[in-house]
Length: 190
Image (tube, rainbow, N blue to C red; front, side):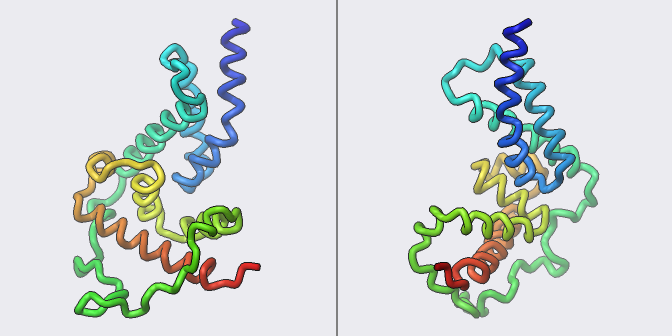
């Protein structure tokens, strides 16, 4: 029994990290808590499957990713049929490009973007920009770019077409680019 308590405490030590991770992806505190709780329960039930080939946090995050996808899928079943569809006219052009494919408003010079990755202030701007995206766009972007799921996996898990996936990713990337350009690269950081 003492061994079980020790295992539960070692899992509980990762709760805060898992909560932040889930909240970032789900954007809902109660859903994030549910996902983390389900993750910890699953980890306790499957503790004999953890072989130590990775860090405990990595293993828990892997379980959490699946719990987030399961939650998203179950919530998505209640959405109207067109919730993940293209815009009303079926066009994904948001006015960023001319008819010949040239930028209407070219991206700003970002200088040395690699240096921004070292800045905690940049990551706060990034997280705020992600929060400003629609929940759908943020979720799909997160599944692709943060969780590293393939296009096929995403389409299957949230039941959308490949075309819709690409449109959603396009919109999410444009939104993120615009927000980061305006709130990070367009601001003097000294």
